[in-house]
Length: 621
Image 1: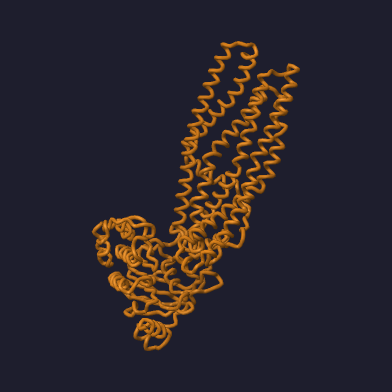
Image 2: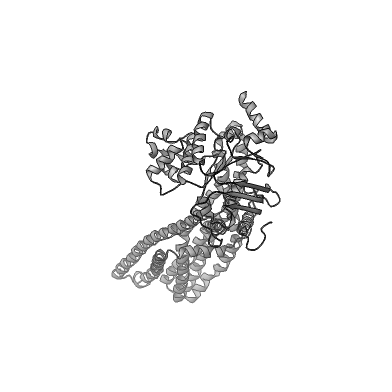
């Protein structure tokens, strides 16, 4: 029966699937690459509120940034006033002593302003780096909590782009715009107050260009964020394509697809260039326009100031002060306009980060019923299980099987028949659409996922090792294991001999993805890792398919040691490796069509016998 009720534990997964679709994913594949993707209107104010939530966590740094910005703004506002007083009180009357004294005061003001500006920038850098550190940690934590389905549907380059480029944009913007925003408000208000104090009419004249500036800014910014959001998406596609081709470079070269890869990259790169030109040219026009408005404002103030001074309505010192305050009044607007492209890029990057953070993680273990067992016996039952990666296509169609504790169950069949899907469901990388899977009689939907997976050991065809020492890679199976336990696990996995021949033995540093080891050596390390974890259920997914015959014998010996006393599921294309299985299940088109021991299936003269005879004939040639 399909799980359709509101309490269905699959509901979270289904919700996650809808969230993935909204992000532009297509089921069973990567992101859509047909031209420039359409970008929905984003919520800039909501994004800013979420960034502000991160900023509030850095209260001490934020306090010092605000305090230094206030003091810097006060000194900046005091400078033009003192210059005006100096001209009117000491330059025009030609009082040299007062002029020198006022000059020393002005010098002190500028030095203090420089000191607080430096400290302000230091604290702003600390604030921005701490903030993006927290965002980066939250994003990485979310990666650990998202279901495997998410990573099956996104390229590694796209995820790296969100973790690096997008967050770097946020960091660069926070480092400048937080200070700029506070300073701009203070300078705008302070300059206006000072100008009103000096002359009401001159202030009104200065305000004449403000409506024009606001109109231009609004018209340009209407399109700017849209272009920057698309630019970030295209950058993610470029990163994904580069990462994919570098990882598969040998395949590209073997099949002579260099020119095709260059052509595809040229198309993707051209889309990034086209959208980048639109975004950068539009944002680049803001600065020159604002500078033009500022120059016009200077001209208007100078002309009217000269007229007013001629009629003794204001002094020369007031005109000089007004020219400075006019610059300070327009400068915040000008600076914000010049940095608007960075601001829009940061908003777009933050939105892409928050899109991932807002995805529904795997079913919360806080809400799912828990059945924690210190040790399970390993009786696994599939009851009429149906599942499909796409809603309209079933990969498994009513699969039923029964594995008794300690049995070795082999899964064979053509590529795409559903063998690996059985494993994905048992480990709850995906959740079933209908039917039931039990371990020791308990529905795995009611089990804590982490507790379930701790009881399952997984050895994959692609043996993955991490950067670090061999000892650390084996200890990954159980972090509290002693060095002696690590070495014993390696001995049981037939890995101890080759490890001790290495220059530094167990302390040998592995390069990225273990490229300084052979495929067979990496596989033995993953088996040692599984031995150390001591799981109750073992899954071997074509663990010997990528190695030579001699290495295969070593791995088979290690696998026999590992499988002893454990319920084991083995996926294998080499039928010679599973002849001793307690039961062999032949899966075709999502259904179990044959099952029995090796001898029973050979005697039946069905699909399994046909596969075996073909492999035997091929090996005999």
